[in-house]
Length: 169
Image 1 (cartoon, rainbow, N blue to C red):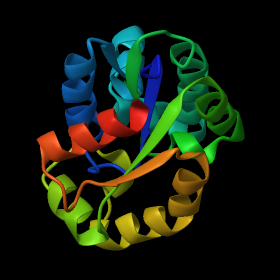
Image 2: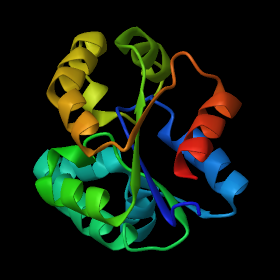
Image 3: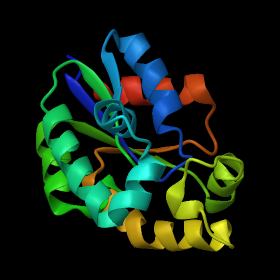
């Protein structure tokens, strides 16, 4: 019996949206992305919400959306990279579904995100240093909530999806 709810956590650039879409299609589940859902509902980009309300305002909105989306059945949910910073989010993820930490080496994450302007936390003079700082802060939290850790730096898309599928059985 496959888990009804699969939640993907990990840093920006780990592949949560890409893998999540493929996994959902593969398992005949609905794919949802917490950041995209937030943008759809507010009519504002994550970057704009950060600009206007700061990180704390964004995190408050994110907490409400994660509380709601983690109750959705037959879903693959990609969370924002910082969702694990909030203890209520961690509790909701752990208690309501199967959590997969998509992990990749910092160099891989930097390469994958370096041309993406929609990463407000990386909008800095030294995005690589910021990425290392983010990972140092969050890696333990990702590991704490994870039922499964998948290295997306060494697996291609079909391999990553297959590994998650096998673990969810």
